[in-house]
Amino acid sequence: MPKFLLMVDHDGGVFEQPMDEWDPGDIAAHFDYYAALTEELVESGEMVHFTGLADPRLARIVRSDGVSAPVVTDGPFPESKEVLAGFNVVDVESEARAVEIAARISAVPGPGGVPTRQPVEVRQVMNDTAFDL
Image (cartoon, rainbow, N blue to C red; front, side, top):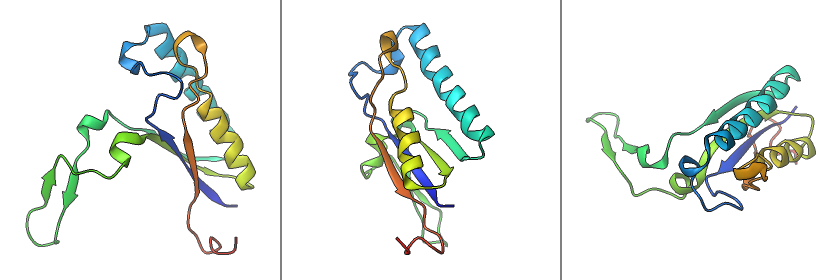
């Protein structure tokens, strides 16, 4: 079965208000939704990995020549620092199923229970058959 990377955009979707300014109940509902979806996908055997990422201000760029001490900086960053909030790797029957799961992720509730409509990028993970599209 093909694996897909579902990248959740840091863009708040229909909400401009950062999550740390939401009501505590809305934050809890947001994470409860993710927990229930993750549990469902683990039970179905489709979830390979799920990770939410810490605040982008904590991101670092590391460069190394493999000999000297690495150089660690706070940028410049490719777009991912500003946009990537988290990701899932799913092992599903088809791209259509990956899109279905991405749609459910995009519908995670925000303030007042309104779906956030966060963008979720769907990318197939390369494997031996990745070029047999």
